[in-house]
Image (tube, rainbow over all chains, first blue to last red; front, side):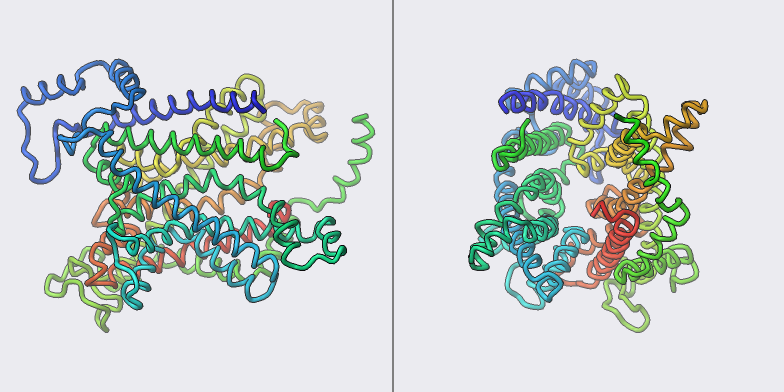
Length: 308
Length: 297
């Protein structure tokens, strides 16, 4: 177990390095330079000014040197200044936006897990009856339909037709509701589908029959015996779930005008804000890789039958 | 020991239906699945719309009427007009073309990259396999959509670049599937038999192993199509997908959602189109999976 954990932690290093390298190369192969803005209304810079700026930001050095400088600084949490928001460092922007994305993501994930498990269990208990169809349709809808489309439907339904929540912003908890739901529906659908399938298997297992035969009521059977075992395969889903919530936040944050990291990523994309893009990709990448690691280790703790 | 196993296994192998009847069997099972059939019908309609967009669209997708901007649906414009006074229905019809092209076209690239890599990795084994598997693992750890967006920002917007970006990132899953299949199949007796009869590397792989590994590949492709359609819509939504003025549903939602308060129709109709398309492909894909390989469920 310890060896497995150690190997997995060490495996993080090449993964993150590869991620940094790929991002770095892609960014530098990109046509269009941050020194030569093509955006409308931007003033063209003189060649001398461009040269000075390039020297200032270290853009005139060979690529491998730039990559090395980037790495050594990044290890210390220094990603340099944003090219677009010149007065602020990338770390500042991330420190400000990441907690917002994290809050949104955690709420969405919590909703997805609670909602997904509930729907999955209901579907399995009432197999081939109304509850089953309702939750399976809801799950399919959440999985199949992109979250920005869901977001549009949610705004139409709950901001216009039934004006319960505002269309965007991040000022009060009321504004949190719609983005959280929009972000949660896809992972909720996946969890519901998996829970249903694994519950159906567990409900028919011998030990559940034994529990019933001993005269246990329906609720204890479900919660004490079935659910514990049905939950195990669902834990493996948490890794992809984090990814779905993470990348999903670009779109949901853009639509609902949430000032989080996802929205900043989309903005920095069009502005060719190299340091910002690198930092965001690496933050997401590292976060997802660590979460996958945690999930893998958790899996072994939850299910003692698994040996590494 | 293994000889005994062969003797026992042989009659079972013979009793299996041949590939043509397996296909017929699959189609029969698919046709019994009502949701899958409904999905298939919608997909067929969308294909027809995409192919005959030039005849079906009432107006060219670039035709602006600056006298009638952002109009709600009316008799003249069944789905209203957009912020440049263009007919929304016509743009939606042409948008189907982009979605279908991306869905099907990107899968060709994905298969062309993923299947050879997976097959070679599994078949050759040894150091080649180690190297390729490590490479696949690193690619797999990379958040996919993030990578596609990065690539698109490098390549620039455009249909061809979307193919390339989806192709370069989408092959990983199919390569894994193919590798696993090839690994299992290459140990089977009929492969040994073919090798004993003098079949070379190429013939073994192309004639004996790959045809038997086809089912999971087909299933992966049917699920890859809606994923590619989603990716295009997502890219166009944030403005790094299809180049305007070519209409794409994702781009229409992205532009329309900015005006959702005043002109709801701009983003609602393309949203509905994306939702219906994705659901149809999901139902159809589920049906294909269940029909071809009930074990996979």
